[in-house]
Length: 231
Image 1 (spheres, helix red, strand yellow):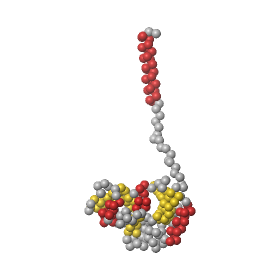
Image 2: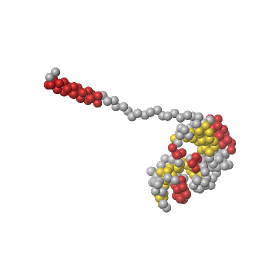
Image 3: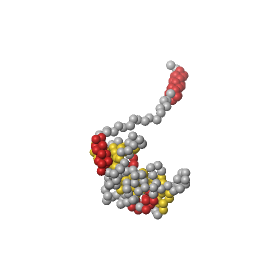
Image 4: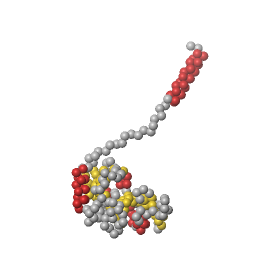
């Protein structure tokens, strides 16, 4: 084999390898974005059953700089900075949005509400003039996260918490028993009010909220994600 022959052979092999690499590049499969199947939780795990209060959703976000943002279920409605409140304008009317006076209440209690701490906090704004009214002459804000705020000594004095009715491993008969007792004895959130709305079931492992109501239980939105329970 001559030196010239070796050069020609190597050149040919190099051209072949280059061609093969180029061909493989053109043949690269364009996969769609991969999405794995969800992790399946176990049904027989802890649940917490609370009274479902018929009001309107209200949330408060507190930033590190102390600024407080007030929201409804679907939008931000106000910002509180020190001794000033700035209302958002309604998209159609241009008038300030206040969600049944929730932002005004937050402004009046801004110093106490700072005790909630940095983060996002969810609750139900309910009482006089909102949905069932519950026979109250005032409005209340009840926090959803009972694991964090059930202790009266650490919860801001202006806040309430949704009543816990039962806790234990998931058990359908127990849920129905809780519903039966609630219907018979009336609201735990507003004692003496005999037309409660229903219950909310928090499944701890699956991190979901489920609701069951006395009226129109076959209608509505069904399942809701549990993220709001984190604060």
